[in-house]
Length: 112
Ligand code: 5GP
Ligand code: ZN
Image 1: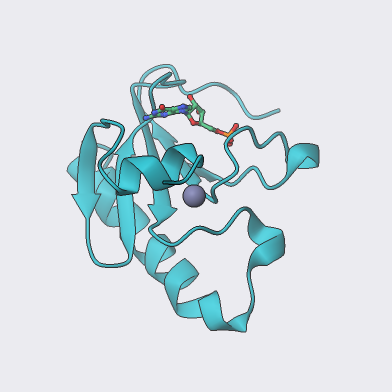
Image 2: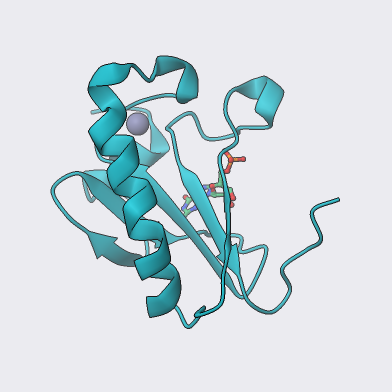
């Protein structure tokens, strides 16, 4: 039993609207969407933030990035999307399990 929220979603202990899953990653809808499409793509293994990434994780992180455009198209975003990683408290990260936000569509806020 872990107290990491996203590890518990991976374990199926907490429900989430899962849109994609493979052996390495899980992608689900953000519970508090900031745009019409707001997904969270996470590695299934627990990594707290980018500070924990080493060269052994390159394939895994690359795998998440490769999936993003496919996920965006599947969500009805053919012409682009925004990907955000908040890393560590200084980066505004609130859930301590590395995740990539995929945002797009109606309501996408300005960045500046
Ligand atoms: P952070 O600020 O850590 O980059 O983003 C964490 C995100 O996780 C937030 O956008 C928040 O809405 C989302 N979130 C927090 N708790 C849950 C939950 O229990 N389920 C889902 N699906 N998303 C969550
Ligand atoms: Zn975790």
